Image (cartoon, rainbow, N blue to C red; front, side, top):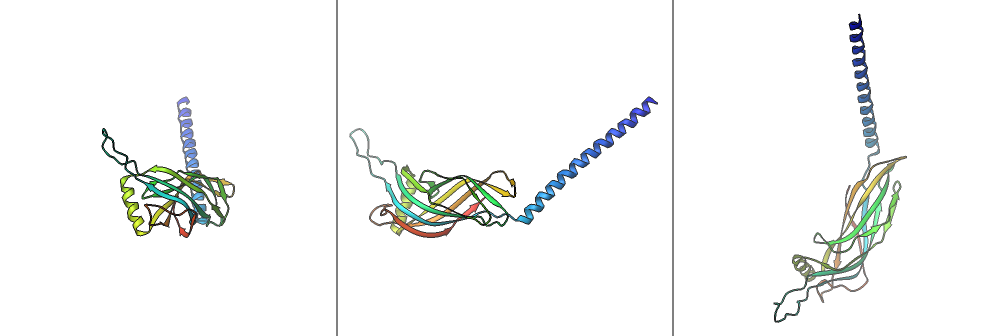
Amino acid sequence: MAVKECGHHDQDDNRLVRLVVAGVATFIILILFVIFLIWVILRPSKPHFILQDATLFAFNLSSSPATPTAIEPPSLTPNTITITMQVTLLARNPNDRIGIYYHKLDVYASYRNQQISLGTMLPSTYQGHKDVTLWSPFLYGTAVPVSPYVLQSLTQDQNAGGVLVNVKVNGRVKWKVGSWVSGKYHLYVNCPAYIRLARDGIGSAAAAIKYQIMQSCSVDV
């Protein structure tokens, strides 16, 4: 009789384990289904960015030959770019039911996929439904070393009368639905800006020239 009772208890324990596992699996599936359903209903969209304008204070390239000596042969000093500009960025939240938190947004200028300014940090911002945010950061780059390829490309662009500078944003975003806040997602924004250059020197530009651009930016989240 003792053996039969032990087998009966084992069967009860196995049945209890199966019920617990089935219950946990059902709960997880239900939670995932609810999250998926909420996601489908809300249809979250990534934010829209527009580069409204750019004010150029300085943009020039230095590539002067070094003075040769009796010991050292003549050589070229490193090619460097100096840039000072202020840009106006507009960010819009297109969602009706989702808020957006912006964290650690870093803005910088790029030419031919090479960063030519220091990053400027934007303040952390919360954007409600359909809200619009404006930032006007300054971008600085003093004697930034660039490759010989950039010198050649910039010379060609200068002869054509203009240069394409990309204003880029790197940072993190969070989605907010009601009281729920998601984890952080990487945000990457690329805004092309065509800048006209003077023809009296490589990469030169008169001070404080403001360009109305109104260019939509590509956004990846």
